[in-house]
Length: 207
Image (cartoon, rainbow, N blue to C red):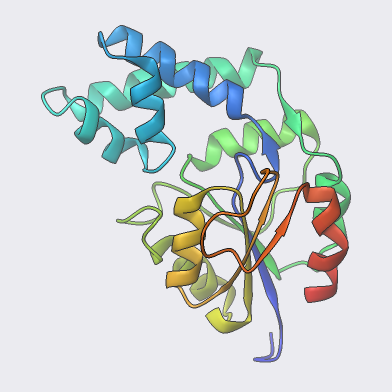
């Protein structure tokens, strides 16, 4: 890979995969098992990795037990949940050059792979998940880790996000950040598209 190459780093949930309602249901179920308010827990979970969510909403609970329950609920969702890829996601990912794109997610890789298999999306060589880094978004660490593995200059990386925490992470990593699939752009987004399909030609042009 030359230093002149451009790369694309994708968030997953809300960006490529329409799994928002699935995640909401999983976190509400998890919260219910702990006697917590589902909406409040989900609001925290949107911004942090699971281990950080547990610490914030259930500081007295055993993190290992919290994670085991979440894993069980998510595994069940992968097997039985109804969800899909956003329009144009498959065509976009298949059109990208091998080795020039990655997934950067706060979820866990095996669940992402399960969802991608069910929706027919290709999985790239590089997936940076919650277990890959010590700090999650909005820290720049996940995106910088993806760039490191790809051998990419952060300044030549384009981040595709939907969430404010991901936008902050990408900008803090010194990358270009575009947002998709939301009514308005999150603060810090340098371009915004109402849908992933609308952004796809511009993403391919970047690469």
